[in-house]
Length: 179
Image (tube, rainbow, N blue to C red):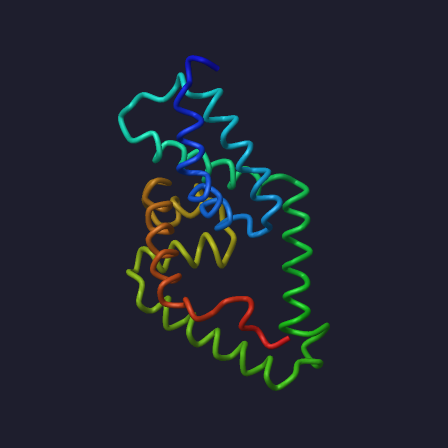
């Protein structure tokens, strides 16, 4: 531990920032704090891999992001997310189409309209990538083959499209659903 005297001051300065970064992915405070501990452990064990090409703070932020994404990919987390999605589905749409309330129908209609307007504002490549990859659920390789471009290009289209859609649909949050 003597070869890493930076960790104490770095943790003191950046723990709050890292916790906020983690909470973008994992909103539960206790789970986010657990992941923060994992981040600092990774910083400590992987410090020898830090090349110095960027800032140490940026490197730790990237570790926090990757740790958060890996936590989301855990099988138990996936099940938790499926349960939450099912709860929202039931909340928004009821147990069947014939049970939908007028406010839920209006909510669904408004969201579909705004989403379609958002899609219309994307470039043709971004719109095609979103449709094939996200809406139809095709793999990145399959999407790339259908679009006639590389997988990296598909990922780039998706990244830019999602950023644009987030800005356009910022007023649509799960907490705005009528439940």
